[in-house]
Amino acid sequence: MAVKKLAISDFYEMKKEGRKITWITAYDYPIASFAQTSGMDMILVGDSLGMVVYGYNGTVSVTMDECIIHSKAVRRGAPDVFVVGDMPFGSYHISDGDAVANAVRFVKEANVDAIKLEGGERVATRIRAISDAGILVIGHIGLTPQSSAALGGFKAQGRTAESAEAVIADAIAVEKAGARLLLVEAIPPELAAAITKIVKIPVLGIGAGVDIDGQVMICGDILGYFQAFTPKFVKKYANVAEVIINAMKEYVADVRGAKFPGPEHTYSILPEESGRFNEMLKKYIK
Ligand code: KIV
Image (spheres, rainbow, N blue to C red):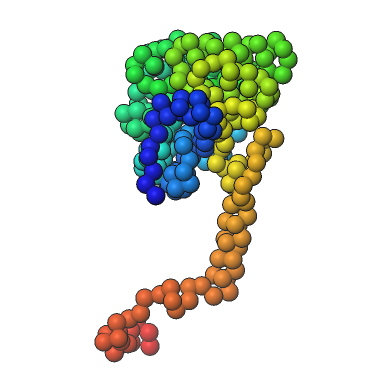
């Protein structure tokens, strides 16, 4: 079935009609192509690649160059899916100019459809500057992993009336600054549902309940191949790690037992060459 690539206007239509938006992270060609085949609406080349692909214990050491390389692979794997590049720590923290320059790199080098950056009111001028450059921006508020040290760890946000109001203020600031979609992470479902009503832009969530416009999940979590930790909000749809480990164990056993490769995995000497081949070998093996 041919896939129609969605545009930003489609997500507004989906919000209006109450149709949920589906979003997953991908960092490489194969997972991106599987996402496209599955009918996924959006792909995020998240800076979570630092943990899922590179084995770092957080996202802050991820670089722009790493994000670009992975975004290019994802774009090749999913040419017909709306792809979002994730601005890594340091790529928008210094100035509006820097933020625009790095967002432009995502579009020019990796052909992404939008960029995402973390923060609310404090990044409003960055969001404005990038949207003024004609690039679609997705805000990300609530738990923002790049500032987990300042937030006291990877902790749910907005659990008191006061901090919930701060999250609402961030949502309003992000929308006002020009963001076209909003991601809310690890906040109570009641708060996420309220934000979905307060702002006009589509609100997607991770760990934010079901009463919002769509969901995003990290591929390594739902497919079961990221094993370092599993947040409460993850549902595992497969155990790919188990499948891979079992396949590798079988391969190891086959090689050690000389059961692999079998004749069906080898190339034969051409029948008309077998006489000359045997003659030639006598020079080497007496
Ligand atoms: O980098 C990432 O994968 C994210 C998730 C929270 C979706 O931003």
